[in-house]
Image (cartoon, rainbow over all chains, first blue to last red; front, side, top):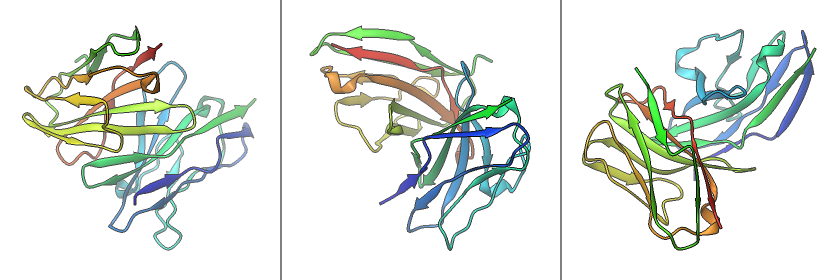
Length: 107
Length: 112
């Protein structure tokens, strides 16, 4: 069965510190993985997707098929990064979301 | 473009009542979907559609019906509301292939 696990409900880091939000998945097929973000009072929106291999707002995520992980990383956290982050797996036409990690960046 | 719109924003129902949550998009997206968001559960897919006239069940379809008579609209019907359906409901849309979903603002539903 498809599953996405985000082990941290809450994560707090100081401004300027590195941040890593963990995501593990289980899927027997070839995975497509995404990170979505929801800033306060805004809609859920796509942050990045693994197939693009891009860096958005300083965030990167590498798909590690051996460890079945897709952790989100940023070397220097900013206050505006405070938000709710969701990891998502696309299996066929269905999406499976993790339970989310609330990131707080302390000034 | 308005993007994805949802109505109403808030709704309170009594157990057993029925209602329809409306979702519309003006981006000509083929794919549309409904999710519910519950504390500690993340977003769970209820139903989805890959085009007009085509719908399919997601992870948690029981108690909900959908139809897709046009590309723009994808209403979600609660047949007989139950307290377990108290949740925040999100509609989303995406182009064919769905490399990105665009979400609506959500509908907060309370069933008493």
